[in-house]
Image (cartoon, rainbow, N blue to C red; front, top):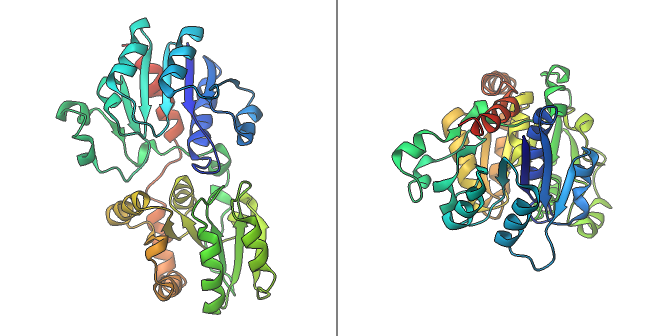
Length: 339
């Protein structure tokens, strides 16, 4: 089959959509022709590194015209859309006239109502928000939950390498995503410095971090227990606990069973993090970055560094994700064309 993945990457939206699609695409590539449809950005190097064909959106081209163009050129069997955009039912119905199937991933819009399959690959979906566009029967058929969380292959291979034993002093990893559009790391550094924690603080900086000049200004006067290093998985798994922004990384921390304090870049993420906390108790949720009281963060850090609570959190995380989400989502996509 010919399958198009429609997703974007940029300093504003980060890497999550593309990394998620790449992970699923790798599951499907042996038996299918995979093409990525995206906007031009230097961060598309991730797609190129996977040796996938790419079609780019032209300057000034609307989303609807872009989809129509790639559909006409390629005549795909399936278009997988993993992009936050208000697709209309008419737009997607038009694409389906040539028997193309539509799979919608993690996007609430009118176009869901005519999509052949809807997937929310997370454990925090509030299904009530789907009622605006979907019938009760359609909502029942939405695929979502911990079993559909998509994790990179690299993460799956690290699970047995994480040591769940508090070091002396403990290691606290701070990771705020590939781009950190709200500058969460810039806010956290002065707070953590003021706390005078008896711990090693590893500040992991994403490849496309947006506030490099501000960071340079801050790191010139850090205590010796602060270490600023480029983000890498090898550094990530050094953490006894983590401070992490909401997104794919939160689920990676849960899978690796690293007790994590979640901070959200925006109010939508804050709501999702709260739901995840209430349902499964696998993170400590601080809410939206602009609403956080540093003293509350200090208390939560020390709570996670309490050995008995730490062990309890490690065990809870171990029961949520099995790392098979990408395979399940891949099978769902293939089956769409069998109907």
